[in-house]
Length: 350
Image (cartoon, rainbow, N blue to C red; front, side, top):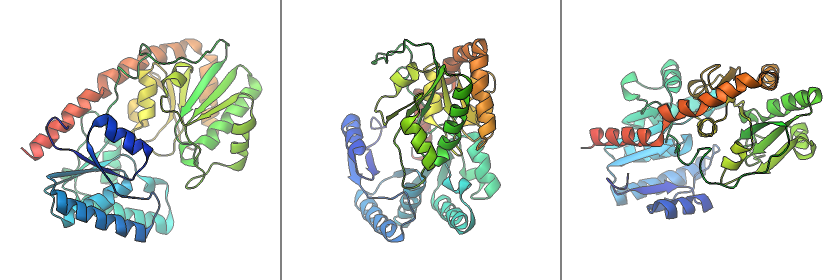
């Protein structure tokens, strides 16, 4: 977008943000924002955003994530930014209950009311927003075929150049990539895998991602199994996940909620079939029986049975693996998404 616009990136600070600014060669502004409900910190961030927008006078403000969306859209509305755009990449409220759910519903409505255009990053997400009555249908639009940013299928490719992990044994490797939290289905995944291993010790589970025990911690017994089970290999956060996809036979992604998960697209582009839950995003990327299987969320038994079927039906797994990459490149190539988003910007702001 910097070929067409002056781009200023706004985010909470951190090493990853600094690295992104250096790589993308754009100007950045740090506005501390939390992922929790923190009224005073949120008010401070809102004031900082208002001051920033008054200084910069942007033509477009485009927000991502729930907290940045609410604060960014509210600040942009207050400062009368002409194009106020928000991408919905997931709704944490879908797993909330009681007073917290009512509060999150209200906040989401405020975000969309302040926006001039709202982009759900999947068609199922668009329908969820409509069913919940959060905004008018004419304000919603899915860019291209969905996803927030598409996927670079040259980078995520079995033929790309990266350091391979030595895998000389004959085990079937299931891989999970993501945050190690309850909402990603880690508890069900570890329990299902341990049960599977008791019947067949030629399987292993590769876990890639940071262990986050503050907001949404996994069960203590699951953490213990991850640390000590001989067939579970936890490698923590990795800046390049391609070697771990290449060392695996299938992705298992039993998340409770998503927007449009990059991990499932990345695994598919690397030629892996996937076991995913029947939630928005996942159930659009995966076509049942073609490039993976879809199971109910929070269902440990269904997850176990799906993983067992992958072990028992190697030819079917091979067939789904062959379909995996073409079904990603034809629908979610990054340039398709970028071109569609650029066309949207040009239409809104000639």
